[in-house]
Length: 155
Image (cartoon, rainbow, N blue to C red):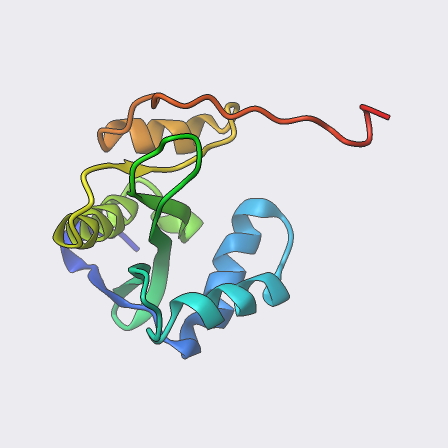
């Protein structure tokens, strides 16, 4: 089936979308994580927070073909309040059809309406398709460098 981004409806995710988000995520990660996603849905779907949280779905003919989760956050180390995209997924058969970009545009519109001037995300450096997606949507390297230590190796 050929998809055009204009045929995709972007709207809030609902509780009934949980199974499809778990399925789409598992297609990309190789592992179903229903408990993790139940926790995300509890925080992000249905409102009830004083923080702007975004849980969006892209639907074609009523079928979920993509999702995005993000929120407004303030971080330590002098970072200003910003929008943060922490998860995005698109049905593998619908990649490169504009669904992810439509979800991203809507999330940025909501962040901007909340007074946010910057949106951030974090991507694994060798996830070239994900990096290319964000770069094609205007994201560039930010002013912070993420550092980590492997606690198993540092013993």
